[in-house]
Length: 269
Image (cartoon, rainbow, N blue to C red):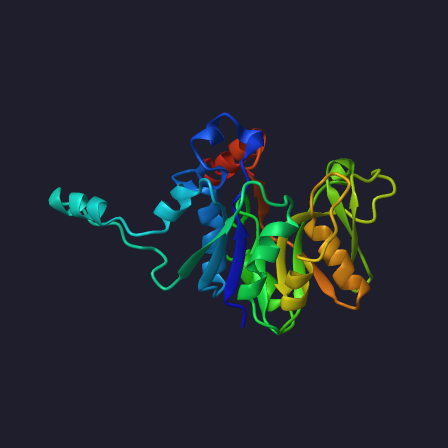
């Protein structure tokens, strides 16, 4: 059973400046809750009870406050005859792994930092903290992903888009059995291998998580988690590809954040 999740939230949120100078990107509100809380809720519904946030050593105090206790606030509420805030995830352990601001940069780095907390033979959910999958019926997409993954195995969620849109994304190429081959970045719509895009929602076994610490620096200067996935598959590993049922919502850019609020709060599709 998978009970651990790794959620990177250490990015500076430069696409959302200037608001992210004061508010952590993962804490930007969707309705009356921060983006990252939808990610956490999905994990908890799937049976995850231990969450490793990879945070920036120079900020990320807001996420710690949100998932921590606030005794003065509860005392204030009680003094005014109001109900205290219940800790929604009282059975969940939250850990904070610090990533240095001047450290290596890229999607592989936070996963590599959490590798020592995932023992050999175990798998963990790996999800970014500024996007999520919304199901109007309240069901858990992470639960579906875990259920579809063999014990000690690896898998990924992907979102379907129209063929006309594929040039904007990293598109998944897979076998006829639905196993990951590679990601094709910004393909031509006519030659794209599929219409399923990578949304960085994974179950990764311990070997794949360790591989994140072995990738070479890309020409862009970054270290990419996709390179670890490619290495893993080249060495005989299998990553199953699973289309999502819900709506993929990305709060990492302004238009996506506005759309996410319209979907969750306004009931738009």
